[in-house]
Amino acid sequence: MIETLSNAQARGIALAAQGMAPRATRASGPTGLREAAERLGIIQLDSVNVFARAHLMPLFSRVGAYRTEHLTDLLGLPAASRPGEPARLAPFVEYWGHEASVVPIATRELLRFRMADFLRRFETRVPEWSEYAAVWRDTRDLLLERGPLSASQVREALDHEVPDKVHWGWNHSLAQRVLQLRFLTGDAVSVGRNAQFQRLYDVADRYSALQPLGELDRAESVKALLRIAVRAHGIGTVGCFADYFRLGLGDAAPAIESLVAEGYAVPVRVTGWDAPVYRYCEAVPPASLGGSALLSPFDPLVWERKRLLALFGMRYRIEIYVPAAKREYGYYCLPFLHRGAMAGRVDLKADRKASRLLVQALHLEPGAAKGARAALLREVERAAAWQGLDGVSLQVG
Image 1 (cartoon, rainbow, N blue to C red):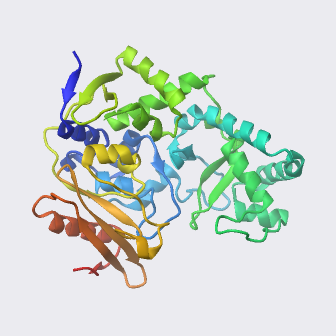
Image 2: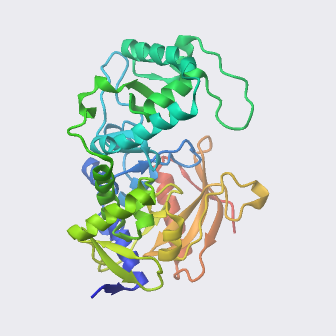
Image 3: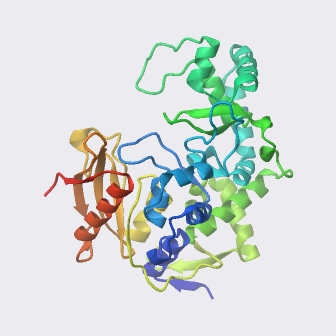
């Protein structure tokens, strides 16, 4: 007989799996940070720095205020090596997991099939490979001699012109495009990012930790990635689990069937959900869902918007690319989790010069618990203090 769960029970399982219930167990030291990062299994990167870098926020949401320098050795952001010292890899390295992300080194190795896919697509779509061949050789020689280097350092060393800008997007030289290709295909590795948040490239075969421990085929790799996703979700659909590492449903569906056969994923019903749902075999609803947390737009809990809507009733999108006049909630709006529910959202901006955290918009969700606004503002004050700002400036009523 298939177990039936209420939506509230499913919500509790999801929060517990993400390390967000209850808050009393959180630890903000290096050990707590590592445990929280390993529980997630992947942390998304983004260059937007309106309040705090995207990779900093998920751990603040889960462990509370922590010293950001403790994250350097774990994620290599910024890179820990100093001039004159040999480069080293942090326990988490960057690769294309859920968009640009940092993942444990072992997880990067599971994504080798994606590296092969990138190379195959490139060779198919770029017939003018000869244009790249010399630069491919030159970039490798340069990295071997002087790496790790940023793309701008490589461009300057190889004296490559930046092409004229023809649209709003990124405008990269040939050397920069080749470096990106090297990274996507696994030939190069990012050893971290510098203080300007530029990726630092090096040749991958310089690092023994990146050599595959054994040959995994595509199906085995996908299944291993979905083990991580199922555990990190606690509960979800095949689509939810596949989205965690941006896997195709054609790959994910048979892997989930295999995990069900092994007892790792358990079919369940959730009231109000139409699609088949699966629970991580060890996941149980927590006893309580107290506490509050601000969530980055790039937090794993809000990645899959359909799941967010089904679990919490929140329709959410990041409005960075929405024209100002058409924004509904604000440029960089953070969902607010309170007592196990999405109780509001707040548009934040750090004014570093004035040392203030600006609350540019604040919205409570329908049915938000009594005291949610006060709890949200308390969490904003904690966030300001964590970022070393002197206070909060409320620019809304």
